[in-house]
Figure 1 (spheres, one colour):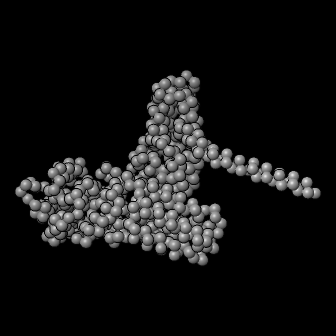
Figure 2: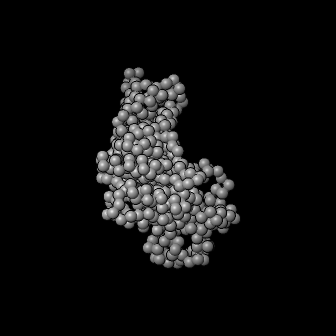
Figure 3: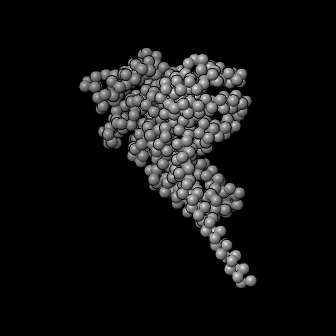
Length: 494
């Protein structure tokens, strides 16, 4: 998510580091690079101009110019302005205490509107509500069938009519009446979309808005369409007065233009973001956390919330108790890996941990998921006794495990060595605070801990550093030769 803009902003901010006192001139020069990074990320031009103007004005001040580390203060100013650009946000969904609340979902075809209706229904069910889906998208033939399938998966009733003998306004009106009769608390209207914004679509949505009078109107936008998403949000808001936007496919958006522009251009906040196809992949949009991700600072709060939702709390407590007693086994480690997999891609997880984003970039085309599969394969090739007592694994057992997992004996050795170190360190981590745990995790990752391909990574890093190191050594020798020649000349003069 946002890889391109994060890297571009990182290069822009590097211009401020190591320059000593920062002047008005290099602030303006650095802001031009930030401006270029935002434009390349497909952020709206007017938004970029206002953003750069505000940041420059705040950066060119006595407080920053006299600061010990002004580069950090500039990053802080940009972080705050990004938060202001995207927020504030109210994540609440209007649900009445009495009666039935109606949420109208709208958007263009291909934005993921019908799937998002299902995701929103899942979210409402988790909050204790009984949602009711209405299939009012009569434009796309498969939309009704798709919503019926989603309703069956969620355990949520779906109202639909024959598209040949009805119209969207009638379906919405009848659907709300049916929901009220069934005692449903919340109705989600999946309205029709088009391939582009047109007068017929807007007229249809306005009729639904006037006759059904929904409590909230939410627009679903595809984040990967960049400025097209922003312009469609503007058009829908002018016709309906939207209450919020849901950005879908944000996990595939490397630029971030829509997320940074929607609120500023339309005044409508982004309430939720879709970060995957699964029905539970609808997250609240937090401007402060998103700004942190964009600047490569990580997002530990979202990672914590994911872990709290996905992890088996009883299993984690059991493993923690075992760690404290020094009984942490390879079986426990394998179970922890399986829990971590529930959080998603390891690259995405690492980027959410402060300070580890740069490490992900250094991995290149190496895939942490492959490493986890290999480690799991090695553990699976062990007997229960070997997993419980790794110290009994001698040469013959090591060779057998290597053959069974398709690895080398050296890989088994590294796994056992790393696990022995990890079990001791994790035992000590049980009494640490979050900051110290993260620091230790980063140290382990930097050292290639639990990574069968650590040597490959190190070679890549050495080769990347090589030319620079050689150049530095060459420059040093040249300088030494020049100094020696100057010394000889001085001696001759004497």
